[in-house]
Amino acid sequence: MLGVSKATPARAPDARERFPGDELVTAGLADLRAGRRTPAALLVAAAGPRLARAGVQMPAHTLDTSGRELYALLEDELGSQAHSRYNALQRRIISYCAAKTQDARRRR
Image (cartoon, rainbow, N blue to C red; front, top):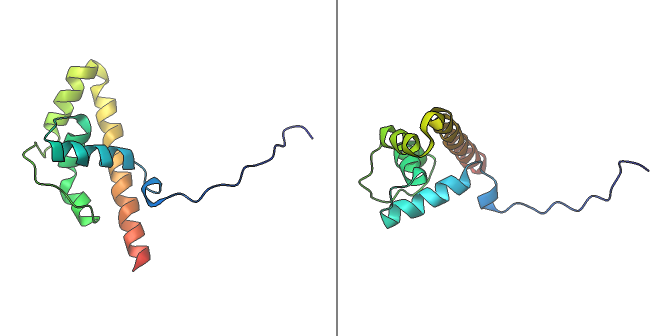
């Protein structure tokens, strides 16, 4: 039969794989704890209040929480592509927070 292949059984995703953007949040939290000024750290810092409401333990930090520093960093790295990358990162963190919040509600 053409086009038919044996499907491999899907493995159950672990908790970290369930939320879109988890890799950004994980990296951002690690960078915040280490005091690094990276796009992931700045993204997580800016989304801090929303992440905290979603149940994420936020470390203490001194990074900008307005998102302006993130945009400036992206602009330095990407030039005219900064705007689209900034918006993509914002959508990703919003998706993460929404999924994490929905999961917490479902578990209640």
